[in-house]
Amino acid sequence: MKRTRLKRRGGLGRTAEQLVWLAGGLAQSGSRIEDHYWEMQLARLIDETLTENDEEVLNAALDHLYSADARAYDELADNIESRAECAAGSLAEHDVVLIAAPVLAWSRYRIPAANIPPAVLANLRVHLQAHVLAKGAKLSVADFLFSPDQLPQGYCATAEFAKVICGAAADNLDLHIDTDGMPETAQFLSDTRYLLAAVAVPRGAALFRWQEPDGTRDGALEQWRAQGGACLTPLLPGCAVDLVLPDSYFAASRAADKDSRPYSVRASVAFLATTLETPAANLRAVVAPFWERTLEEYRIGFTVRGRDEVVHGVVWPLLGAEDETTDCVAQIETVLRESGLTDVVALEHHFPLEYCDDCGAPLYPSPEGEVVHAEMPEEQGVQAPRHLH
Image 1 (cartoon, rainbow, N blue to C red):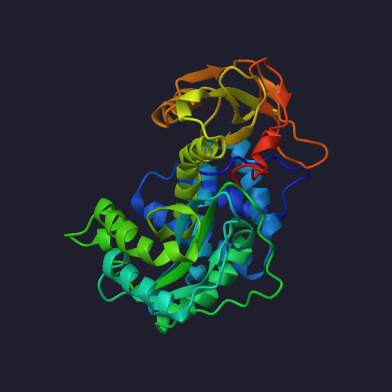
Image 2 (tube, rainbow, N blue to C red; image 1 turned 120 degrees about the horizontal axis):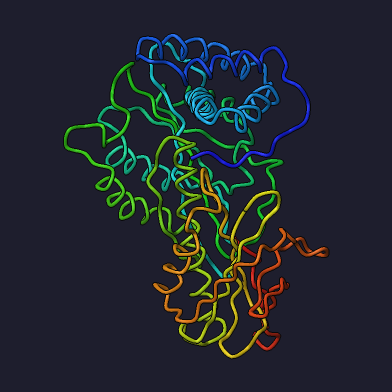
């Protein structure tokens, strides 16, 4: 599941053209032995590009293939992600990978991004090794709970971070994060926090618990939610939390993006029911598609039944291959009804992707078919955080 890309202007340089050619060869390959050849060539060129910190070359190749060859795009994106999160194969004696353990959270207060105390870090290490990683895997855990804005930005920055933390994993040492100059975290009702770590195993050995004969992903997630959640919840005071299965960095990030959509809807319903002191069945949701050149996202405007003022809103972005043919409205309606709403209005009009000129917040659909700013009633005396990150 890859993020939608916006095509950029300009021709391809030599390195980008070579990446496009290699990815096309891999997409058309007819055997595993041919796959191996193309993958080796791609790995070498991607590693060189990551080392040279040439993000534009990688993006140029991806942008070209996104509209020209979907299969080749997927192959190139998969290989770039793999080389970035595996530290570009920098450790000869180990297989290493950067992993993420996303935490979904919502709160009426600020959701913290915070340093992890040594005792908590030690407990997280124990539970990751016991429930998520394969037996004997070495581990490094970063001592900070990251917000999305604080994660490495781009493939090259991810590869650089992975190189550092994967090197620490080979020595079975945790990683201290210097927070000086780290971006501030914006306030949202519902957001994601990331525990980052790295795993190192001997070449060819299993990395994760579910790669072992008696392990499963569902079992790992159940144990991680119970044991890891008990460690992480105190780091997020005043927050309701849910944990996503730890996995390789990009796979876990995509899973968090997908899971955060229904989570943010449920969080909004719970928030409004508490803040407005009204049952969920007394709320109404208006769902509408928002377009730029193509369908980009659905937005949900919440009102109190019998009134037309939009008091809160949620963005449901399209992910990966989703488009106007994907029945996202049915998914959204299912989540809303499971959350207790009985009044759901789905508008078919194509709304432009508009934001407030003053504060930049998204505008949400109203029952009258207009796009408006979401405003909580003044008598509640609270200012709702804007929307999902």
